[in-house]
Length: 237
Image 1 (cartoon, rainbow, N blue to C red):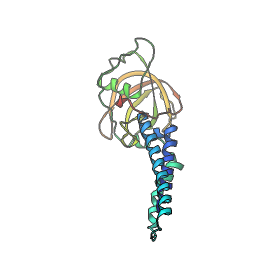
Image 2: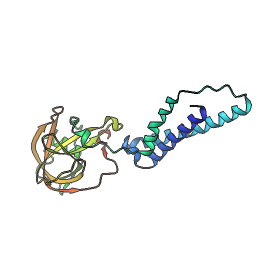
Image 3: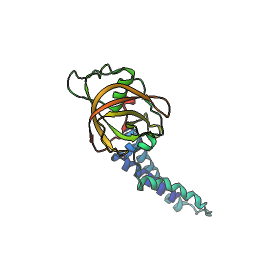
Image 4: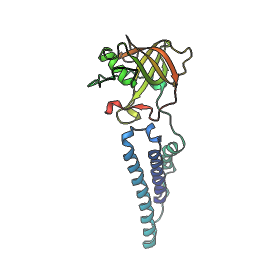
Protein backbone atom coordinates (compact mmCIF):
# COMPACT_ATOMS: atom_id res chain seq x y z
CA UNK A 1 0.00 0.00 0.00
CA UNK A 2 1.38 3.41 -0.94
CA UNK A 3 1.09 6.46 1.27
CA UNK A 4 -2.13 7.65 -0.38
CA UNK A 5 -3.77 4.29 0.24
CA UNK A 6 -2.58 4.28 3.81
CA UNK A 7 -4.06 7.73 4.29
CA UNK A 8 -7.38 6.55 2.87
CA UNK A 9 -7.48 3.63 5.30
CA UNK A 10 -6.60 5.93 8.23
CA UNK A 11 -9.33 8.36 7.20
CA UNK A 12 -11.96 5.64 6.93
CA UNK A 13 -10.96 4.17 10.30
CA UNK A 14 -11.08 7.61 11.92
CA UNK A 15 -14.50 8.27 10.40
CA UNK A 16 -15.72 4.89 11.68
CA UNK A 17 -14.54 5.73 15.20
CA UNK A 18 -16.22 9.14 15.08
CA UNK A 19 -19.43 7.50 13.88
CA UNK A 20 -19.28 4.95 16.70
CA UNK A 21 -18.50 7.63 19.28
CA UNK A 22 -21.33 9.95 18.21
CA UNK A 23 -23.87 7.11 18.33
CA UNK A 24 -24.42 4.26 20.76
CA UNK A 25 -22.38 1.88 18.61
CA UNK A 26 -19.28 2.36 20.75
CA UNK A 27 -21.13 0.76 23.68
CA UNK A 28 -20.82 -2.58 21.87
CA UNK A 29 -17.05 -2.36 22.34
CA UNK A 30 -16.13 -0.28 25.42
CA UNK A 31 -17.67 1.15 28.58
CA UNK A 32 -19.53 4.44 28.36
CA UNK A 33 -16.80 6.42 30.12
CA UNK A 34 -14.39 5.84 27.24
CA UNK A 35 -16.48 7.80 24.74
CA UNK A 36 -14.17 10.87 24.79
CA UNK A 37 -11.18 8.65 24.02
CA UNK A 38 -13.00 7.02 21.10
CA UNK A 39 -13.82 10.43 19.65
CA UNK A 40 -10.28 11.69 20.25
CA UNK A 41 -8.79 8.63 18.54
CA UNK A 42 -11.05 9.13 15.53
CA UNK A 43 -10.08 12.79 15.26
CA UNK A 44 -6.36 12.00 15.53
CA UNK A 45 -6.59 9.38 12.77
CA UNK A 46 -8.39 11.78 10.44
CA UNK A 47 -5.87 14.54 11.08
CA UNK A 48 -3.04 12.07 10.48
CA UNK A 49 -4.62 10.97 7.19
CA UNK A 50 -5.02 14.54 5.97
CA UNK A 51 -1.47 15.41 7.02
CA UNK A 52 -0.14 12.37 5.15
CA UNK A 53 -1.92 13.40 1.95
CA UNK A 54 -0.64 16.98 2.28
CA UNK A 55 2.94 15.80 2.91
CA UNK A 56 2.90 13.41 -0.05
CA UNK A 57 1.57 16.05 -2.44
CA UNK A 58 4.16 18.55 -1.27
CA UNK A 59 6.98 16.04 -1.66
CA UNK A 60 5.74 15.09 -5.14
CA UNK A 61 6.03 18.72 -6.23
CA UNK A 62 9.51 19.23 -4.78
CA UNK A 63 11.22 15.94 -5.58
CA UNK A 64 11.60 13.51 -8.41
CA UNK A 65 9.34 10.58 -7.61
CA UNK A 66 11.41 7.55 -6.54
CA UNK A 67 11.17 4.29 -8.40
CA UNK A 68 8.06 2.51 -7.23
CA UNK A 69 8.12 -1.10 -6.12
CA UNK A 70 4.82 -2.94 -5.72
CA UNK A 71 3.96 -4.02 -2.19
CA UNK A 72 2.53 -7.47 -1.44
CA UNK A 73 -1.18 -7.50 -2.20
CA UNK A 74 -1.81 -9.42 0.99
CA UNK A 75 -1.33 -6.15 2.86
CA UNK A 76 -4.78 -5.12 1.68
CA UNK A 77 -6.21 -7.72 4.07
CA UNK A 78 -5.59 -5.10 6.75
CA UNK A 79 -8.67 -3.35 5.39
CA UNK A 80 -10.99 -6.25 6.28
CA UNK A 81 -11.30 -5.42 10.01
CA UNK A 82 -12.08 -1.85 9.02
CA UNK A 83 -14.84 -2.96 6.66
CA UNK A 84 -16.24 -5.20 9.38
CA UNK A 85 -16.33 -2.25 11.79
CA UNK A 86 -18.11 -0.06 9.25
CA UNK A 87 -20.52 -2.56 7.68
CA UNK A 88 -21.28 -5.01 10.47
CA UNK A 89 -22.31 -3.84 13.93
CA UNK A 90 -21.71 -6.84 16.20
CA UNK A 91 -24.38 -7.66 18.77
CA UNK A 92 -23.59 -7.38 22.44
CA UNK A 93 -22.40 -10.57 24.11
CA UNK A 94 -25.37 -12.74 24.99
CA UNK A 95 -26.51 -16.16 26.11
CA UNK A 96 -24.01 -18.12 24.02
CA UNK A 97 -21.04 -16.51 25.79
CA UNK A 98 -22.75 -16.40 29.18
CA UNK A 99 -23.54 -20.12 29.40
CA UNK A 100 -19.96 -21.01 28.50
CA UNK A 101 -18.42 -18.71 31.09
CA UNK A 102 -18.66 -19.04 34.85
CA UNK A 103 -20.47 -16.43 36.88
CA UNK A 104 -18.16 -13.57 37.87
CA UNK A 105 -20.11 -12.33 40.89
CA UNK A 106 -17.90 -10.32 43.25
CA UNK A 107 -18.55 -9.40 46.87
CA UNK A 108 -19.58 -5.72 47.02
CA UNK A 109 -17.48 -3.32 49.04
CA UNK A 110 -20.67 -1.83 50.52
CA UNK A 111 -24.43 -2.08 50.23
CA UNK A 112 -26.08 1.26 49.43
CA UNK A 113 -29.16 1.98 51.53
CA UNK A 114 -32.49 0.97 50.01
CA UNK A 115 -35.84 2.78 50.23
CA UNK A 116 -37.83 1.67 53.24
CA UNK A 117 -41.03 0.98 51.32
CA UNK A 118 -42.18 0.06 47.84
CA UNK A 119 -40.73 -2.27 45.20
CA UNK A 120 -36.97 -2.40 44.88
CA UNK A 121 -35.70 -1.73 41.36
CA UNK A 122 -32.20 -3.17 41.50
CA UNK A 123 -29.54 -3.96 38.99
CA UNK A 124 -29.10 -7.68 38.52
CA UNK A 125 -25.54 -7.45 39.84
CA UNK A 126 -26.74 -5.62 42.96
CA UNK A 127 -29.45 -8.20 43.63
CA UNK A 128 -27.04 -11.11 43.17
CA UNK A 129 -24.45 -9.55 45.48
CA UNK A 130 -26.98 -8.88 48.24
CA UNK A 131 -28.54 -12.33 47.86
CA UNK A 132 -25.23 -14.20 48.11
CA UNK A 133 -22.89 -12.16 50.27
CA UNK A 134 -25.40 -10.31 52.45
CA UNK A 135 -27.61 -13.42 52.69
CA UNK A 136 -30.62 -11.42 51.57
CA UNK A 137 -30.88 -9.39 54.78
CA UNK A 138 -31.85 -6.21 52.90
CA UNK A 139 -34.11 -8.11 50.49
CA UNK A 140 -36.22 -10.30 52.77
CA UNK A 141 -39.92 -9.53 52.55
CA UNK A 142 -39.44 -6.99 49.75
CA UNK A 143 -40.71 -7.03 46.18
CA UNK A 144 -37.74 -6.91 43.83
CA UNK A 145 -37.54 -5.90 40.16
CA UNK A 146 -34.50 -6.71 37.99
CA UNK A 147 -33.76 -6.68 34.26
CA UNK A 148 -31.52 -8.92 32.20
CA UNK A 149 -31.43 -11.26 29.24
CA UNK A 150 -32.49 -14.89 29.28
CA UNK A 151 -30.15 -17.85 29.01
CA UNK A 152 -30.85 -21.55 29.47
CA UNK A 153 -28.35 -23.87 31.10
CA UNK A 154 -27.61 -27.28 29.60
CA UNK A 155 -30.21 -28.83 31.95
CA UNK A 156 -32.83 -26.22 31.06
CA UNK A 157 -32.41 -24.02 34.16
CA UNK A 158 -33.46 -20.47 33.18
CA UNK A 159 -31.07 -17.67 34.06
CA UNK A 160 -31.42 -13.93 33.99
CA UNK A 161 -28.02 -12.46 33.13
CA UNK A 162 -26.12 -9.22 32.73
CA UNK A 163 -22.62 -9.07 31.30
CA UNK A 164 -20.45 -6.99 33.63
CA UNK A 165 -17.34 -5.30 32.31
CA UNK A 166 -14.37 -3.39 33.64
CA UNK A 167 -13.12 -1.78 30.43
CA UNK A 168 -14.39 -3.28 27.20
CA UNK A 169 -16.41 -6.13 25.75
CA UNK A 170 -13.30 -8.31 25.64
CA UNK A 171 -13.28 -8.56 29.46
CA UNK A 172 -17.08 -8.82 29.93
CA UNK A 173 -18.17 -11.62 32.26
CA UNK A 174 -21.65 -12.85 33.17
CA UNK A 175 -23.42 -12.44 36.48
CA UNK A 176 -26.25 -14.95 36.70
CA UNK A 177 -29.49 -15.16 38.66
CA UNK A 178 -31.48 -18.38 38.40
CA UNK A 179 -35.25 -18.12 38.11
CA UNK A 180 -37.92 -20.10 39.95
CA UNK A 181 -41.60 -19.56 40.65
CA UNK A 182 -44.01 -18.30 37.99
CA UNK A 183 -41.63 -18.61 35.05
CA UNK A 184 -43.07 -17.90 31.57
CA UNK A 185 -43.78 -21.19 29.77
CA UNK A 186 -41.66 -20.25 26.75
CA UNK A 187 -38.31 -18.52 27.22
CA UNK A 188 -36.27 -17.52 24.20
CA UNK A 189 -32.52 -17.10 24.84
CA UNK A 190 -31.31 -13.49 24.58
CA UNK A 191 -34.79 -12.09 25.22
CA UNK A 192 -34.65 -9.19 27.65
CA UNK A 193 -37.03 -9.44 30.60
CA UNK A 194 -37.95 -7.29 33.56
CA UNK A 195 -38.71 -9.76 36.31
CA UNK A 196 -40.63 -8.98 39.47
CA UNK A 197 -40.26 -11.36 42.37
CA UNK A 198 -38.91 -11.99 45.84
CA UNK A 199 -35.67 -13.08 47.41
CA UNK A 200 -35.22 -16.76 48.18
CA UNK A 201 -32.21 -18.25 50.01
CA UNK A 202 -31.92 -21.00 47.43
CA UNK A 203 -28.72 -21.01 45.39
CA UNK A 204 -26.71 -23.33 43.17
CA UNK A 205 -23.13 -23.62 41.99
CA UNK A 206 -22.33 -22.56 38.46
CA UNK A 207 -21.55 -25.74 36.49
CA UNK A 208 -18.74 -23.90 34.67
CA UNK A 209 -16.67 -22.57 37.57
CA UNK A 210 -18.52 -23.48 40.75
CA UNK A 211 -19.39 -19.85 41.52
CA UNK A 212 -22.55 -19.00 43.50
CA UNK A 213 -25.77 -18.36 41.58
CA UNK A 214 -28.68 -17.02 43.69
CA UNK A 215 -32.32 -17.60 42.83
CA UNK A 216 -35.14 -15.13 42.40
CA UNK A 217 -38.71 -16.32 42.94
CA UNK A 218 -40.63 -14.87 40.01
CA UNK A 219 -44.14 -13.49 40.35
CA UNK A 220 -44.27 -11.64 37.02
CA UNK A 221 -42.08 -11.28 33.92
CA UNK A 222 -42.39 -8.75 31.11
CA UNK A 223 -40.42 -8.66 27.84
CA UNK A 224 -38.60 -5.36 27.34
CA UNK A 225 -36.32 -3.80 24.76
CA UNK A 226 -32.59 -4.22 25.17
CA UNK A 227 -31.19 -1.26 27.11
CA UNK A 228 -29.13 1.43 25.43
CA UNK A 229 -26.06 0.13 27.25
CA UNK A 230 -26.34 -3.68 27.33
CA UNK A 231 -23.43 -4.11 29.76
CA UNK A 232 -23.41 -3.59 33.50
CA UNK A 233 -20.70 -1.16 34.60
CA UNK A 234 -21.39 -1.12 38.34
CA UNK A 235 -17.93 -2.63 39.01
CA UNK A 236 -16.47 0.67 37.80
CA UNK A 237 -18.34 2.76 40.38
